[in-house]
Length: 305
Image (cartoon, rainbow, N blue to C red; front, side, top):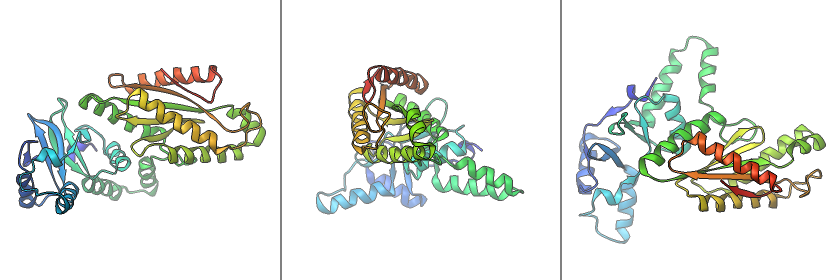
């Protein structure tokens, strides 16, 4: 099932220059939870109930809202999906970004509709109800899992979904994104010395430390083995280096003993790459080369491509 089969067509919308009162009137008339904002057919933002509540909360303290324009209140650079996006990919995106609405665009990047979290959940429930065998139901539920079982961070499938949408958003809104590829230093020696159970425990502790030290807007995934990928939307290279260095320091400060390492504790090496033009596979390749340089340069350091 694809998003084009679920989306609600655009019945009415507003432009960024319209008065907010017009947008609220449409929401009341249509009994809908949001209004799409477009300009010349292209998505510019979305006005949701949450935006209205936030504005009026501020207005009670600061100012009158009678003449406020839509552009002042709307959520800018909204997350968009293609009509051909699968239900699974859209669900993963909505869950990871904590979104209730996704704007739907066509192959020309023009706004054509809206799909809500309720639409997607209802569609998924309908799919489950159609299954005749328990094995098939379990398989469908498994496909919705986007978390690595060991490290409790995003898995490879979820990573690819998020990277696809982050790349598309970076191109659409001309805002760069960055990737940090991390690898545990001397992890084979750690497993050989302490055993695989201790190795699994170390990876769990590592993942928890990374989650605690990364920015709220960033997302972390298990890339493979002991390699971890940190995705940083709307981030340039300099800011990505700062964010990666903060993660590296946090892991070293964790001071998890590693007698087979010259650092005597668990450490990570990190390769960083940033762009707004490269596709995400090329960006990962650049980050991987930088990671190789970090390892060759002594490990426990951050290197940018």
